[in-house]
Image (tube, rainbow, N blue to C red; front, side, top):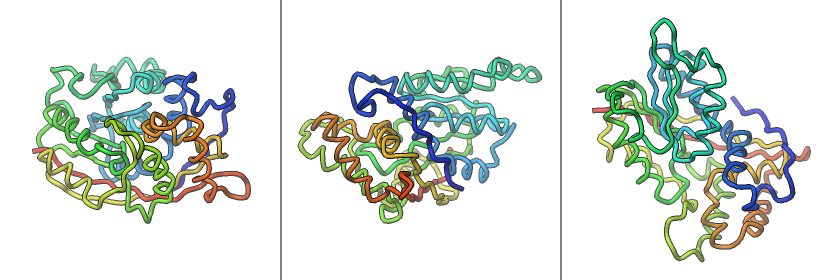
Length: 293
């Protein structure tokens, strides 16, 4: 399965990188351009996990809610948490637009969609053991420190799930199977001059990233798989804006400047431009299914 090419939306000049666009514009780029690239991963995982009306899902790092929306369309009751308030706002637009659904299931008297800004610690205390599936679809293996952050998020989330519940972790496949890896190396090269920590610069994926996180969180692996997730963009502008919306180039922007990052990102993308002007990169993503203790 392949994602639909993203249509180009006109913004003012340099909208992809100019600070004046604000966090809201970048979150919108994530929702409209980049998030859908992982739809094959969402659907393959939900199919294997048999997500449906009996599923009570807690989505960590839910972004602007596309993965939750797909799960809800299969009948699942979904709860999402994300640290980005702009993405959470967009998730609310998507998931709560249907007033009858947002109000809950009239037959069961329970909410079908809930969203929280922050992390799983924000989820109501009465939700202990309320979930039977926890997902973390933000791919590991591309940002420095991402495994440590996920391990901490899982530590807060596991007590909210039933014993033996499934936990889905996702990550980038081997760099040689992911054309986008070469493009993301731009972020690593540009951040070499950034002496202070705190950046989310690119790093190559490691073979056991997901297994290591699961082990640290006390989870028991129970299966894995790989899914092709090509990144397809309608044009260069959409590709640049989509990749910048991931946050993986933030440290590079601080180390240099937005114009420099956009320039080098554009150059790195040129080998992936097709004759019709579209940008296409093949990628493989991994997922690991584990179970709570």
